[in-house]
Amino acid sequence: MPLIPRALAAWRRRTAHRAVHAALRFARDAGAVTAEHTAGLRFGAIGPGTRLAFPQGTVFGEPWIRLGAHCVIGEHVTLTAGLVPGLDLGPDPVLRIGDGVVIGRGGHVVADRAVTIGDDCWIGPYVYITSTNHSYDDPHRPVGVQWPRMAPVTIGAGSWIGTGAVILPGSAVGRNAVVAAGAVVRGEVPDHAVAAGVPARVVRRWTPDGGWEPPLRTPPPTPPASDGARHLRGG
Image (cartoon, rainbow, N blue to C red):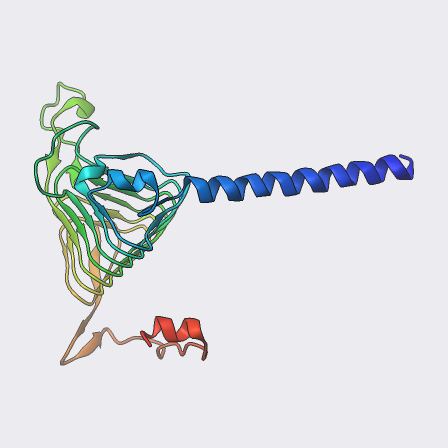
């Protein structure tokens, strides 16, 4: 290829590259939902500094969803209140998300009964939290058309839910608890406990008298001296 056409082709690729990425940045910024965004007005509450990244997943029942301040909701996250859109769910919120909550890309929070996520919970990508589960009591009817079982779900403040975990109806995860990646929780995880497996079971727990049992194998990490590290330490 002659030099000039080759240079022109390279210029066109660079120009197209810049244009595509500029358009993506514009779409992500324009499509994000915040307290100042008109779409944010549909929610029962949305605190300052909270941002639902674009594109969002399925979102309905917004009047019964309350989002705290400074939350980060990743791309393709589903947040729903009620079985289907358009229902009147009464005077009280159904899905409550506290301040400083992070929900990773592709997460689902399905609240047909009350779901409460406490402050400063970090929820990894592709986590599924639901207050509804399919029933299969009648062996002669398709499972998908049988009326589901429903029970409230709570996740205590400061907890970490690992990538791909599933939190089933009726579960209660305590404060500062850890649910390992891929775990399936049905039931209770105490405060300051680590749960792992399918079904999840407590594999480590902290108590004021005994500390961590079984003991941690490594010392706590020391963050570097920086503004970000001071923020993580609460300074």
